[in-house]
Image (cartoon, rainbow, N blue to C red):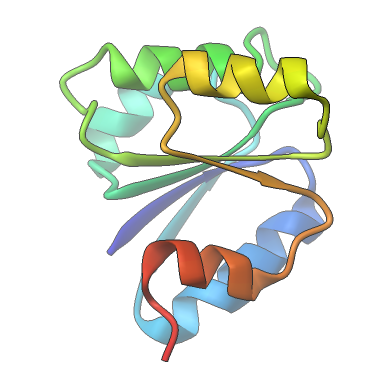
Length: 119
């Protein structure tokens, strides 16, 4: 599986790589989603793991998810990964078209369970 990680925290990128790469998934990383259309075209990911609060980015994760789901790559499975736990943020996540919403801190097993990749 090709995975695009859009995350501004290098430690979170390392955790996601350590979770996914040993299972044979190809992981590509970007610190912002500003050029999401080009990233999607270049890498054609099956899964996008997307932070909501992207510091230094012109778009937040909700907007990036909307752009993915309005593109030819709308079939990619989009997981929002965020520290925002409030009901309003969860509603924004659903409205963005994201397929799943995980809150930080999270267990990597939650992501694997979500993907059906564990075991």
